[in-house]
Structures are given as C-alpha cells and as structure tokens.
Length: 276
Image (cartoon, rainbow, N blue to C red; front, side, top):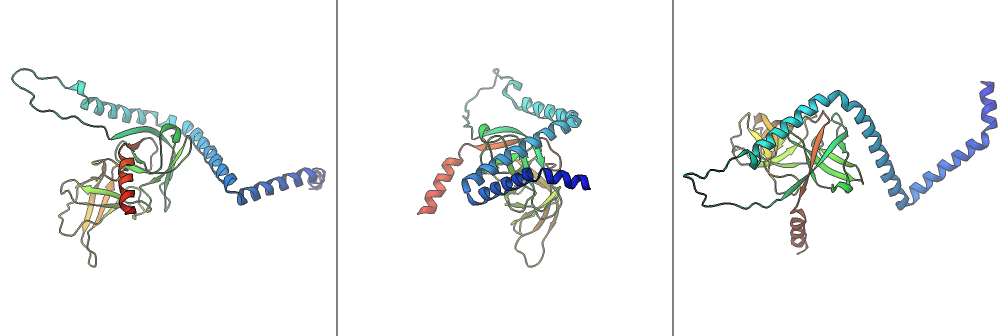
C-alpha cells in the first residue's frame, strides 16, 4: 500500500492533467451542440464497429442455419422468376398484358445487435446513409416485419423493433379484409396485440395477419403473424386479439430495409393538405 501511495505521488501531475482534460471535454460536450452531435455520431460509429466485430465472431456458430435460410429464399425467388415459366404458343393467345411499375427497392443488411427483453427494444444494422438507408424506412426479415429505421449514421442504423410500444403498424386480417393496428404490449417477444378490429368482424383463431401498406413504411401483404386468441371484452368497441409473430426477433440474422419509391410524392401531398 505504501508503494502505491508513493507511485501516485510521483505521477500526481500526470493524473491532475488527465482529470482536467476529461473535465474540459465534458464541459465542451455539454455546452456546444455542434461538438455534442459530433461526439454522438462518433460514439455511434464506434459502438456499431464493436457490435460488428462481436457479431463476426459469434456468426460462425450459426453459418449452417443462415445458409439454409438463404437457400430457401433463393429457391422461392427462382420459383417465381420469369425464367421458371415456359411460353405457350399453341392454342392459347395473349390478348391482354399489364405493365408493372416498381414501387419498392430493398437494401440487404445484417443485424449486429438487438434486444428483445426490454420494455423498449431496438436493433442495430450494418447499413447506413451511404447505402441509401434513411429514417422511417421499414425493415423486414425472411418471415415477417422487423421494425422501422429510427437513427441513421454513415455505416450503421438504429431500428425501432416491433417489440416496442412506440410504434403501431397498420395491418389487415387477410381473410376478412378488415384492418387495425399491431401493437406490442404483451411483454412476450413472440406475440403482439391486434387492436381496432370492430366486434362485428368474425375473426377466427388461425387467421393470417399481414401489413396493410400505403403508409410509406411497409409494402402491402407482408406477413405479420397468425391469430392465437380472439375475445370481445366489455367496455371496448374493438376486439382483444392476440397474434403470434412470424418473425423470430430473438434471433439475429439478415434483414431487408424497404425503400418506398413513392414516399416523397406521398409526403409532399400530405404536407400540402396539412398546410391548407
């Protein structure tokens, strides 16, 4: 102990300098918005890099499962590609055709960090502004919706998970066509609530719930979940519906950021209407 005190006494000037340096940085951070923003961006980039390194180490244990999921997605894509269909030119004649306009593009990304057990859960992905990712873009996985982009850096982005009561997603019961909101209040990462479905609608256990679309976040008909229970409690105008989410949000993997190519036009019209 005596030797420790002697050592601290010898380096007292250095320790004092370091303490004053730290205090000066804290004062600069607290009193200047520009430096605070630069510090936050730098810390986000550093944390994102650390998450990436950690994820690269742990990903090797899941390579087989990831490859199987990628193969399954590629098979599904190839089955729907035009090259999988042969033209018929015998007794059949094409009398009408439809030209489709692309309305969405997708940015593939990898989850480098995620929470699922907190009251408000977030996800960090390894794509940011340099890859075309922006705030309010939807994020989907191989099996269903994942969340909405919140904060964006140059190379990383923070996503509000659907396991977060701060977001409510417009969804629809596919069989009946009635729409409501998917809302996470169950504290269970595998389930969520479906609200705002009127009581006269006959929703059954096992009905598929999909996104409604048109909100500039998710395309329509993206799988969300399947109904587990349907109740009509007194004192409410809507039904209490519990759904099981299709996407396993406790498992990290690959996701797709949705870019709505018509969102700018839609937002412009909404802004004009709100200004009138």
